[in-house]
Image (cartoon, rainbow over all chains, first blue to last red; front, side, top):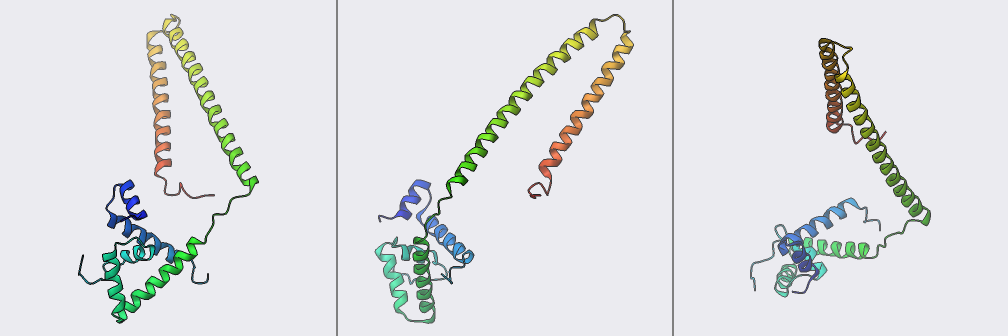
Length: 39
Length: 157
């Protein structure tokens, strides 16, 4: 796997699944915050 | 290769990675197989994926706006002023502390050496000064503690 998620996991010393779930949570939170439907 | 069916409720974080192209082929195949089911759940997953893609396009097109030059100038001036004033306060406090300390020692030595005042009066004066210092330090400590614990300390007036 050559992914930026993997690079984040290695540099932060975190499991890949944790990185993915945190990125997803951040994106979900951002989607809920930003009024992007109008964009 | 995992043969477990994709569960959109439990494995939602994989959808972000799917859209980003961060998944291994086996995981991509699991999600593709789920989407191919054409059930209500898989259609909802497809909608979620489409929204994630759209959101990625939107955020990918965003560009940070550089602040105007005058804002940068004001920022650096403010930093410079703050540093200058901090240094001024440190030097002032240090100088005053040394002067007060030196004056206090000189006064205490002269007070102790004088024979014009009886030992009882000296004792009373020492007690009064010690009491005053104790009260001042107690009040200052209380004020500092109250300031740190204040519920309204972050309120901007």
